[in-house]
Image (cartoon, rainbow, N blue to C red):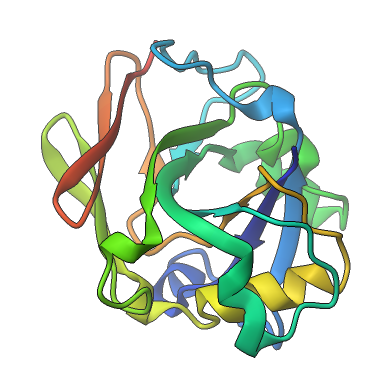
Length: 203
């Protein structure tokens, strides 16, 4: 399976990092080694002093697709989840300044938290799913899929132009504002429409 990530999909997050608003979705990838095993703490890597949490709605692909039309995109996923795209912000900033790829900052081992998944039929509208991240019981990120610049179907269609979608692939759909550094002993909990989807500790 592959992990496909969408960057800069929430306007307020773009603003908080002083990034340029894109004309089309920004795509980057994480390898399967980026997945943090279940019931395992996240260990801050030695190469960064500024690892940020980025909570995101996840989409799990359920069938093979290529050049998928937006109107048929809903047929290619059947589960919605929640996760974290951990980002070594200090390293990313250095790479961006040099015009280099982000992989070292975004795709390092255990940089992807993949929480539980639920059937998409559980949700009345996929364009208005509320989610939040709590750090040490305090809400630090809160968003809704209604705030996305590109909705889930548009993302699935766009991604399929470049990468063949395969069953089990996971798409990270972008993060809202509120990203910040994690510290040792932090406890991170993700909620999708009030239901806890993951809980991890930082070491």
